[in-house]
Amino acid sequence: MKQKSSPREKPAPSRLQRELSAGILDFIRVEKLAPGTRLAEVALAERLQVSRTPVRAALKLLARRRLVRPGARRGFFVADAVLPTLKVPGPPAPDDTGRLFLAIARDRRAGRLPVDVSERDLMQRYDATRPIVQRVLTKLAEVAAVQRKPGHGWRFQPIIADAQARDESYRYRLLIEPAGLLEPGFRLDPHWAAEMRRRHQEMMAMPWSETASIALYEMNAAFHEGLAAASGNRFLLVGVQQQNRLRRFANYDWTFGYQRVVVNCREHLAILDRLEAGEQAEAAVLLRRHLEDAAKLKRNTDNAAG
Image 1 (cartoon, rainbow, N blue to C red):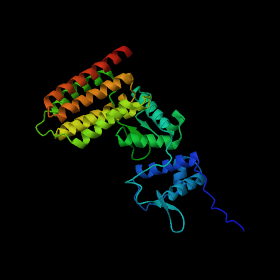
Image 2 (cartoon, rainbow, N blue to C red; image 1 turned 180 degrees about the vertical axis):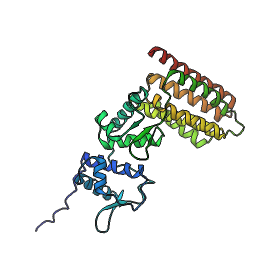
Image 3 (cartoon, rainbow, N blue to C red; image 1 turned 90 degrees about the vertical axis):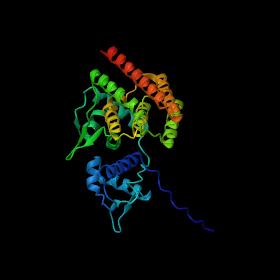
Image 4 (cartoon, rainbow, N blue to C red; image 1 turned 120 degrees about the horizontal axis):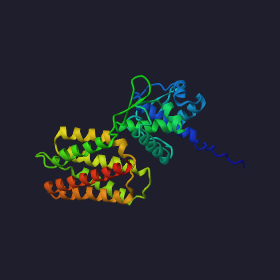
C-alpha cells in the first residue's frame, strides 16, 4: 500500500528575512501607515538597501504571521492589527541593539555625532544593518531622544552635555521633585507602585551587563516621572519629563557598577515604603537625600574625568 506523503514543512526563515521583517514593521510604525496601505516592494527594497526578492520573502513571512495581509490579486497591505499590537517576530539579538544604543549615546554625548544624521550615516559609522539601525532609531524616537526630520534623516534632541549643566539640572530637580511629594493633590497609584516594586526587584536580581544600563535608566526615569505625576501638579510633571529627555543620552552609559545599582534601587524602594505608609514628608526627605547623593556621585566623576 502506497503511503501518503506528508506535507512539506516550510523551512525556517533566514536571519535576513527576520531582519527585513522587523525593518518593515518598524517602517509601518514610524511612518504611521494606516491599515490597508499598500506596501510597495520597490520602495521597501530601496529603504532597506536590498533587492526586491528578499523583501518579497519577508512580506510573505509577515503575511503568514498575519502581520500584513496579501492583496486579492497580488501585493501586500498593512493589516488592521499591526499598529496597535506591534510584535516583531525574530528580532535581532538584544545585545546587538543594546550595543548600538550605547555606542550612539556615547558618541552623541561626546560630540562625535552631529545633531542631524541619516540611517545610512549610522550604518556606515557602526557597521550595522539597516533593520538594526531602524530599530534603535525607532526606540529612541519613542523616548523623544531623536525626531524624524520632515524631509530625510533624523535629528537628535538637545542633551545635558557638560558638567555645569548637569550640576544645574540636579539643583533644579532638588527644587521641584521633593516638593512634589508635599503637594496637596498628591495621590499614589497603588498599581503603579506595585509595578515599580516589581521592576526594581527584577533589576537587582538580574545578572548585570553593560547593555542593562539602558533598562536601568528607563526604569529610573519612569520612577521619577511617576512620582511627579502622583503630585497632581501638571507643571511639575512637565518639568521632570523635560529633565529626563535632556539627561537620557548622558545616563544611558552607567559607569558606577552593579553595587551602585543596588543602592539606587533600595533608595527608590525606601521612598515607596514611606509613601505607602502615608508619610509624605519623610519620603520627601529621602528623595532629597537620594538626589543629593546622585549629584555628588556625578560631580566626583566629572572632576575625575577633568
